[in-house]
Length: 247
Image (cartoon, rainbow, N blue to C red; front, side):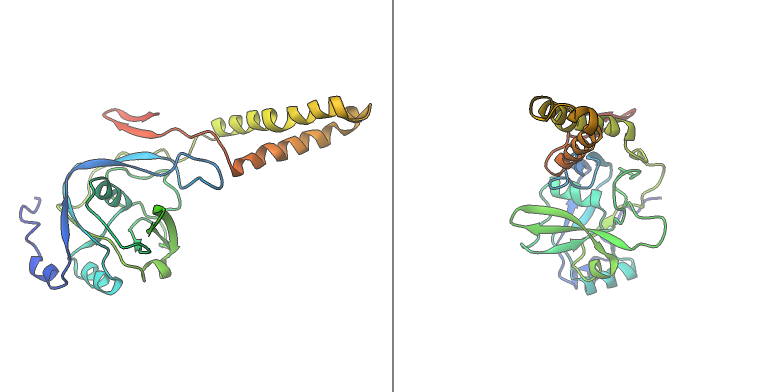
C-alpha cells in the first residue's frame, strides 16, 4: 500500500537542514545525444523518459555530507538522471554557475536503460556516477569516478513509492549494421572516390594500377576522419503505448 502522507514524513528532519523541496508533476523529458561526431557528440542514444508519479526534489544540490546523512537514514534518495531531466523540463531545479552535482546513474551509455524514471546503474560494483555541470554554456552532462562524484553536491528526491514492475527499456545495443553501412558510404563518397578522381586527372600513367591500395586506404582514413566534425544524426527513441517509435 502506498504511503498517502509521504510529503509529511520526515518534514521535521528535512526542515532542520534548511532544504528547499519542490513537487514535480508526472511528465516527460528528452535525454542523451543523437550526434555521433567526436567533437560535438555525447552519450547516446537520445530518448524520451516518462515518469507517471509525482515526487519531490531539492530545488538546489545538497552538500555531500548532509546528503550522505539523509540517504543513510532513509530520509531521501539520490535523484536519477530521468528525475533530474523531468524536473529541469518543468523549470523547478537550479544551481549556481560552476556547480557540479551528482546523480544516481552510473552506466556509461544509455543502451538498455529503463525509461520510467528509475536510476540506471551498473550490475557490478559502481565505479562512476553521472553528473551535471552548470556552466555559462548551459548544463553539461559528464561522468566522474565514484570517489570524486561523492564529494560533489548531490540532488536528492523523495518518492511517493518505490519503482516497481517491468519498465520500458531502450534496446540493449544500437543498430550496428546501419552504422557500418553509413560509414562505408561516407568513406566511399568523401574519401575513396575523390582519391581515385584526383589520381585519374593528376597522377602519372600506371599510378592507379600500381597504387590503388594506397588510394583506397587513404580514402578510408580520410572518410573516417570526418567523424571528428560530422556524422548523420542517429534516430531518437520516443515512447508510445506500444513501445518505441524512432524519429
